[in-house]
Image: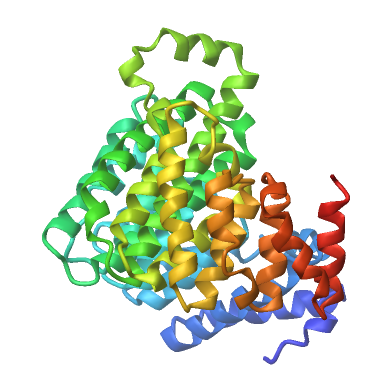
Length: 429
């Protein structure tokens, strides 16, 4: 029966559709059952957009729900897959015991991922070690990623959650040290999945125990910092710079959450104050030093330097409060980093890198000292207008008076936007 979705508002038509589903599923023919389950799944996806219609559908669907969910007891993996998909949409939690039973022997990748997604939504902490035991380097890495995603999600409600962070990094380390095929893709997927978990924590902070969240993120920072130290000298391709960019995003997002929850939770503030200084790993995160070390190790690879700096510019709201803390000991590091960046700006013919260097300096409000400002503007007239405009944004934040003669020459520019920008700067005299 071809379903006319526009008619589902009609009670009689909806009842006819559901009766037809029941008849098809009861046929015990695998091909018919599968087609029917796919039909049900697509219909629910459509209906869920309309809350009133979905509530009506839920009542009618209850008459056949048992026979639908009983289809999970089959040897046909695709049938099990769609039963779980339907249960997920219909918030049918009771399927979890059956899913856990199938999880151990399932070989179909899509089924495994769907089972794990279901467990992530409805599972409880008692399943965590059982799920962790599914890890196996010989399994497709997307399955292992999903296992970690579920385990690390469930671990948020677990007091001793640091052991699951440890397990994740043990697994990452084994992939990396053995140069396992496609290990870079595993890392990228892992840190993307972990970033999603951190974003979920950020949106739902009030749902979690603040101490559990602190221990979870604080320990992640510890493990990630250790990993960076072993990884930093080996960043020689786009995949690896993508990995390091994701790690830095995860680190700073974690740090921002820790700062936020300590600031609003007195009990957590006292808990953290009582911890040994050596256990406050979040305080050891010096983003500026890490940034300088990575940039140095990228040597003359301008393409990777572009991707590295672009990550900061594109995610400035996450990095901004952590890059420049105005600590006295950081001034030397900033001077070193800025020297390398400005040297690259002068040397490179890669306009993408030039632009992102200017964006980086401007967006993070880095003020050039007099010597650097003079060197920065030495070849100002050689650049195109868009570059000059960006340079002017940086010049106006510094002691622009020492390059006033250079600025005055720009008043002869044919570009009115440049002329007006220079006039605005000079007006400050």
